[in-house]
Length: 311
Ligand code: GLU
Image 1 (cartoon, rainbow, N blue to C red):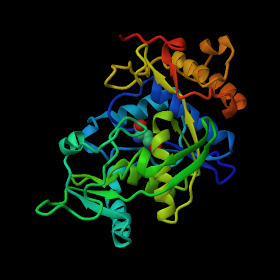
Image 2 (cartoon, rainbow, N blue to C red; image 1 turned 45 degrees about the horizontal axis):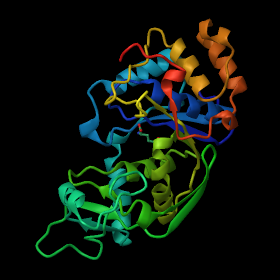
Image 3 (tube, helix red, strand yellow; image 1 turned 180 degrees about the vertical axis):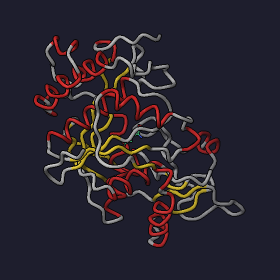
């Protein structure tokens, strides 16, 4: 059902850790409308690389809910869990180039390290303990990417961004202690392999983007354009998530959530659209979508647009 008119390509990449809630619906809608407005394809990728966090049946339920909302994606859904061999190939390329190094530090050691300062997203910056070799008698647990220098990019919603990688985030793990490849590696490889040239996603990932751009450059991959949408937060200011018990979007009656998601994205749909059929919603949304109308903020309270039935 491809309606692609150009080579443009966007994607929605949920992690199947729970049901589709209002926050993920916003990312789905924004990424889809932007891809279609550019005459491009819109792909769906299940980010199930972090298997311990995935819930059985969640991926199937996400697809059912997206379908019930009237989303139409192009091609097969990509599953990260089927891509380990590809991630390994890229990881070995990084190893051969000396871009990654083994790290023996445990989470507890890092949390207690006297020289670990909090980074831009609150997580401790890796203090570099294993950067120039494993301490004597210590064995490798994970592998980290050696990050250097500044990265600048222009976010289509959030404006110009600049990050000093060693100071603001520090060397990130690409191969985890449990043997799984990390999101930061998987997302870069997948976006490139799928030809994604526009990434539209939640602003909770804004601070991850510079290290992803760094990795793209290291691997000689193109850098997509980025647009980071406001993240839907609850009354306490926390991102809606399974942990905050965000209510699932009701697959039997998704119209109110869809309407609210479009309003959340600054598009001002007419009130009567709330009661109209799906086809009318999508026709209006596609005809009127403007990325420049999305509020240039990192978070927005969901309850201003959408009242959840659950607490
Ligand atoms: N899988 C991530 C999430 O659900 C999104 C990653 C991305 O869009 O790059 O938060």
